[in-house]
Image (tube, rainbow over the protein chains, first blue to last red):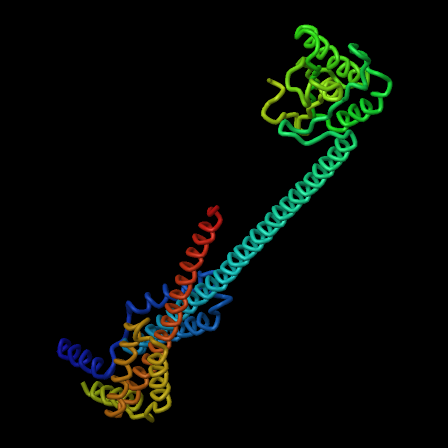
Length: 299
Length: 123
């Protein structure tokens, strides 16, 4: 009897619940609870997903209330599922916010990198410009300097040519040659007459103006007398000219002296006038750098 | 024995009134869920949140069936779940797209830095 009653009671209870069974341990409710907690613990949630978090909390509360109110299992599961979804939406929003922050940071970084690259290019360009400007400057100055040097050496050459012309030096195969005539010496003597002084002054001036120029001083005689005598006399006359230059401040290492006697006559020894022309001292000039044509100094 | 049938019937009647009576169908909720699913589809959820979109579609289908069967309460449940599933698909799709952009940007910055480094070491 009692068993029958109990069976009937259970049956009627089951019927009474009808389209629903009361929930006790609903798995989804636990899931919802931890999903909402996870979202709430995210430090960014209160700022960037506060609306979603609030909705998730409300949904969870409704699910819990449904459980307390002994609503059907389906209803509780449904409400818990809504809470889970709401929390998941919040989590997805936070992921999006983080990605967007990353994009903003990345764009700033990219701009910085681009700016840096542009600045570096600009620096490089300006330093290249400065370098080429400097190079242009240098070559311009070099050209100017070369031009000045050319001008100055041209002037020097012209000056020296004028001076040599004043000395009545003549262009020969051996270079410029100045001839000091017999009249500047006493007969058979090696002493220079005072009349030679202006010529010697100009010669010394020329050598002072042209530091590197050198001279070869050659004495010559006519054919009268012995060779030994003539060689000695011609040498002494050349040496007298060198000595006169030395007293005018011209170092003897710029001056070569040689006596050539009666060799290389410039006129006939048969006539007094020809012999007079043969008695002479020739001064051979080097170029302005000190080099003689055909190396006559070594002859 | 006499009291139980009485109780049983009264409970049955209450249950009928509470649960199984037919409240109005959730037309607005259903429409809202449908709109959200379409919106998710437009926002490339098929590509970026396929699972969530699929679930939203199924729930919407269930809601439709329940509407046809005039099961208002059931239809309301399915419709509200479909709506949230669609919202989730939208949110996850947006997040995935933003993450993809961030990754692309990060890669381009890496390239840029490498290029810049190369230019720097070039004589």
